[in-house]
Every structure is written in structure tokens, then in C-alpha cells.
Amino acid sequence: MAVHSGDYEHWAKIAFIAGLADRHWGNYALYCETINAEAQAQQWRKILNKVWEYLAGQLSSMKNLEKALLQLEPLTPEPQEDDNYGIYPALDACLLLTSALQMILDDSIDDTETAAELSKATVAQFIALSEGLDEFDPEHHQHDLYDQELAWHTHLVKNTHAREPNADIIKQLRRDLADFDSSNLGIELS
Image (cartoon, rainbow, N blue to C red; front, side):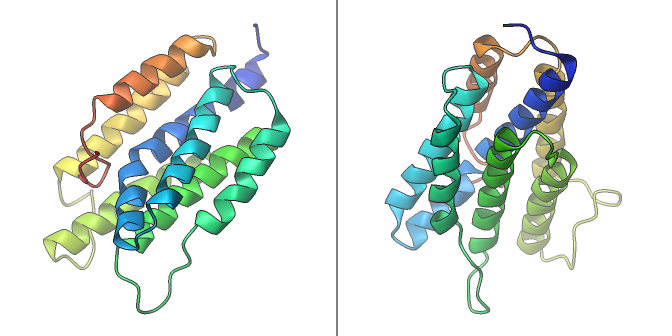
């Protein structure tokens, strides 16, 4: 199916955000495990899979995607003062997935830059916390997790803009994601 360049650009932006969200999957799954809500994690994964199916041309029902957006809302944690750190990366995962769904449902939305900055900030905050820093500044510090995050952003941009949108691009991105044995915070995936 041929698409107009504007449509293709929008498709590529959604794929970029879906790729970021997928790298956050382990963060959300670990959070759900800590609150004994594994079913929530599985529901979140199913919603992300719907986004991938849409991008691969296997799902065209906007009603299905509207329903997925509504299902995501109760899965999104709301941080309280006494919450542990894990809730914040889980929230970021939900925000990324929400952005992807909203961009599918409304092609006037472009959350690409916000999503990219959110994803990088999640990693930077985690590094600061784990290294005992007030803040992690990539201009003055180097860290493997942050370098991997930037490399993934570059990979997504390159591969989503390389060809026409089709199932092959999505299959390849999902294979690339399967090569990671951990989330963008280094949380091992099971």
C-alpha cells in the first residue's frame, strides 16, 4: 500500500514511540510485579502489541485502538508521596504508550520530541539515583545505559525512515527488540 509522505512520516513517528515504549516494557512489568499486579503488566503488553499490529497493517479498527486507550488509563500509576522509585519508570512507560495510541487516533498530534526526551530522562534519572548523583548530565558524564538509549533512538529513526511502512519493518524492529535482554534501565526481561 502506498502512502503519502505526510502519512508515512506520521507512521514512522508512531513506530519510533512504540519502539521507545517497548524498551520500557521491563520497567512496567517489574513495577507490576512489586505490587502483585502481573495481570496489569500483561494487559499493558497486549495494548502495545495492538500498536505494533496497527503499524504492521494487521489492525485497522480505530474502535479497537480507542478501546485500548481507555484500557490503558486504569493501568497508568499515579505517584503518591510515599511511592518507591519504580512507579516513575512505570508511569513513563504508560505515557509513551498513551502517546503512540493518541497519535494513531489523531494524526494532528506529534509527541515524538516529547517522547524522546521523556525516554532519555527516565534513563538519566535512573543513572543519577543508582550512581548517587544529584543529576546525570550526559554532557559531563558517560554511562552505558544512556549510550544504549541514544543508540536505540538512532536505530529507530534510521529504520523507520528507511523504507515504505510495512510488516517487514515492524517485524525487523521487533526482532531487534528481542535482541535486548533488559529494559532501557537494565532490568532483565523474562
